[in-house]
Picture (cartoon, rainbow, N blue to C red):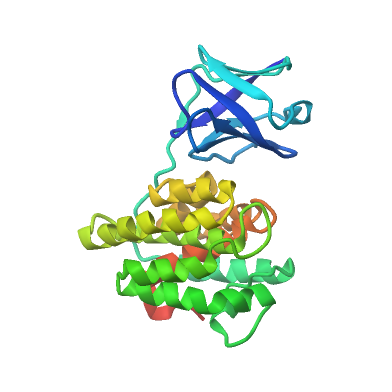
Length: 294
């Protein structure tokens, strides 16, 4: 029972490796690499890539596996102990999760995305409503808890103060429910926004690197799945949903913007919406702050 991978993230080892199944979900699983504190994700998805991901285009009976089962990649084929399931990695395209730099006027695209996000969050009755983060004592309890730390993060990033940014992140890390808590997802999206706006400006990149290095230490207060996403975000590596959204914001294709936004919002239970919240805030800090946020 062999399945062909259709993409492999750039963070997946290209040579032989050993691992153990750490987490098992309906359509994905995480492998913990042997002798390394990092995860590789195998996911059945029609379109969703990760820097640490091995993507399969068809539904795979992952439930035939079990947490703790050993896996090994040899000669480009991934096998699992006591299972006929194998994954062929040979000749598979490499997914590079680095982002496009924003070069144009993104104000209108930002506003459309912001409006679409907030409408979707309210319709789903999400615990995090982006607009309410900036309204005094409004929104669900989680939104109110995150409001002040988000304000602190924005101010610190505007001033390129890595120490103050880390202090704000420390109040957000692990906050919220889910496989990746909302506070973590906001920080991941926030880094995507900063990277997209930084361009080749040395001061901006120096701030991101300083903030990222301290964020890695703060991230030890959350779970290992969030830590994995944060580790890649610090290096400027993100999922295909974030990458696609940034591209369409940059090129101003309004016809596709709402569709791509909704696709990205649909990732996970609320992770997609929370990450987009962070992304739009990060874009606004350095790029569209004159109209941020209404």
